[in-house]
Image 1 (spheres, rainbow, N blue to C red):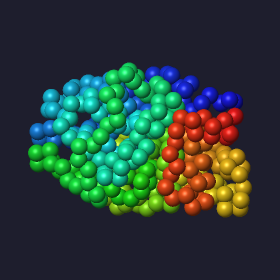
Image 2 (image 1 turned 60 degrees about the horizontal axis):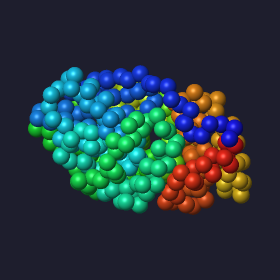
Image 3 (image 1 turned 180 degrees about the vertical axis):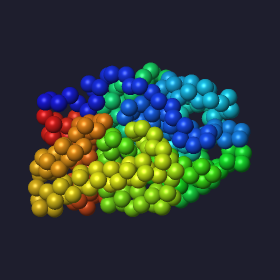
Image 4 (image 1 turned 60 degrees about the vertical axis):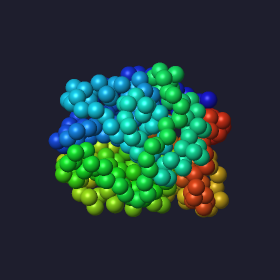
Length: 316
């Protein structure tokens, strides 16, 4: 292969930051690696996105213990991807919460996704043998639910399809702070392999309507201040447009997937090529954009075998 597969060559350790984005609200970030949110209530802690293994969850828990000794009672999964969910057991939480759509996607493709992501990005699966199995939510909801950590309310909401069909956000109204999962990224490529390009911009609009004071994105640094949040929303929109429009133009004219890849590169490499995981995401993003433009609404399941075949076709 002309380019090393996905992120198999990315083995360098990343600098971890633990940033307070509101009173008792924290973002665990690591230079473009998957982020985790922390919400400290009166009597308990909620974690938003779990990391890929229980051992990696322990790194987040160590940061939490520097600021509170309250127990972690809830782990929220913003979506089903392995790097977000497989570390959930490391927190000892009594409830694991996700959307009903997220749970159905774990049932449909959770094992395939685990195998796929492990092969793509081995560094993110430190101590993979500590994973007890697929993470199954203990509680799901449709649309919206509120969780009370004492008097602190956290609103969990499915605002629309975006990064996946079942993405949710966590909003803390007393502080005006949003935890977006991978619906919003900051100077990191959006992974769109399971996305809904046609719906994602409207879901971003729904987040913008909350006018957040701060936002913890799925990847990239914590965003404090309304101007920074707006910048991240605008950059995410621009990235999605840059991927989808050239790919759709090729697809709708009967062009090949390889031609779509070249068209997207011409539109995006100069502007977004320095973003974290850009080269990793690009073939998967183009493949999904090409499919959606041809009317495939439900994203096809990625498997380790499909990943390698597609990578060889587009990056070989």
